[in-house]
Structure formats: C-alpha cells, structure tokens
Image (cartoon, rainbow, N blue to C red; front, side):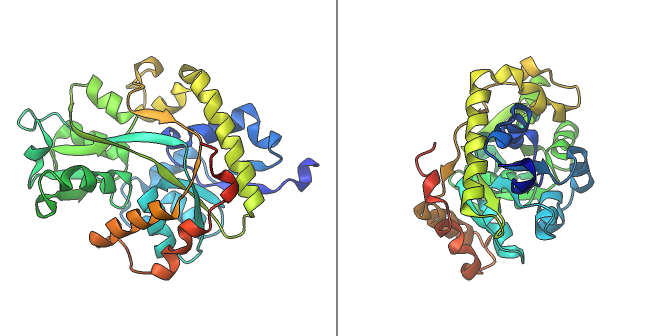
Length: 301
C-alpha cells in the first residue's frame, strides 16, 4: 500500500511508562510494517501544562481526543469508562493496554508503616486516574470506605514533590519511575497493587485499523521484553535526572500483549465504579464499551 494511502492514527500522549510500546513501535517501524501511519498529536512536554488539572476533560490527552485531534489514547480501565461517559465524542475500549503497572502508596513518615495506619489519613492522588481508583481499592478492605481520605494533588511529578515535603499530605500514590525514585530517596511502601489500563479508540477508526495498531503494539512488547534495558531511558526521563536507567526497578512494571476487553470484566469494573459513585450513570454510553471490542484481538495476549 502506498504511504499516502495508509490510514493515519493520531495518538494523545500518556506517560512513557504506559506509552513505551508506542515509542518502541515508532522507533522500530512496526506501525509502518502494519501499513498504518501513527504519530503523536502533541509533544510530550505539553503534558506539563495540565499537571495539576482536576477537570479530566481539560487534561491534555482527553482534550486532544474530545476535540478530534487524536484518535486513540490509553489510560486506566476505570478512567476509560469514565471519559467515554463524560465526553461527547464517544468511543470504545477495544483492548486492555500492554503496560501492566504498579501503583504504590509511599511515604517518608515513620509513623506510617502499614495500610491500616492510613485510616483517616489523606493520600495524595490525581483524581479520576489510576492513582485515585487503585488507592480506593488498596484501602477499602483494610480501613473501610468511610475511613479512606484522598486528596487531589495532580500528576506524578507533582505528587513526588509533595511526598518529599510531607505536606499537605503525608503519603501519595505513585507509579514508575517515581516508585523507584522515591525508594532511592528513602521512602517506603505502605501498599501496592498491579493493574492494566484501557486502549480507547475513536468511532472513526475501523476494526481493521485498530487491529493493525494493536498488532504493532504487541510486536513492540516482544521487542521490549527481549531487551528492556535498551528502552528504560524513556521511562526514567520523567525523573528529570534523579534516576538512571539502570536504577529503574523491574519489579513494578512489565509489558504483555494487548488483550480483548471482556464484557464480564467491564461489568465488574462498572459495578464497582457505581458503588463508589464514580460513574455518571450514563449506562447508555458505558454499556457498549466492552461489546464493541475486536474479536480478532482475543487470544493475542
């Protein structure tokens, strides 16, 4: 297929921790080999403009998607459901993303040593992102829902700075490279959970285009897993020189093939969100999310 006839898929950038298969796919030409053109719709440094934004549709990747400047982006599973419900553009979650990452609650405070010590203690998060949802999941069975306190701080770099200061919160929830960075600086982990995220695709992308994109992502995953150290520098860039690539732990992140988003899993996630009042209640928007996945992706992981 001539280059000019290849469909263009524009990506709204997420953190390199989550976007590493995209970055490697671009570097290695896997998207070109899949006969699609893929490009970012904004620069990575543009993410810094919305680091403390609480309104989710005003954040960079969501705003790019909503205005039609991006065709796809990845975020946590619950966030994917939330954005489709909140937004006006619509879309679908066709797959669970390739990054399997940890979110960990960390502190420098020696008075906090286990999850139970966080009863009534505010934990810094970025509202309606993986840090927020996973904090609720980590603590609800330990301290009880009525004793969980979260406080919106902003994106991971902002939370890392607040963690160092110990104010206005004593603990924050972080993912890589900030888990490794915080541990290097002497923090300790109070609780941790692994989770996958969602690949949100716009209505204008065809099933074939989404399938080509995800197959290229899966090729990139295999490439990453064959030599992770070669690509760790992408992830540690967010630490602004505070962490060398060889200091990035392999314990808190791994990459696996994208997987079909099963309706049963969607049902569990949506019911949990509703139980917390984290759904807008627009079930007409949320219900098709899982049912419009790509059957051909099933079994790729």
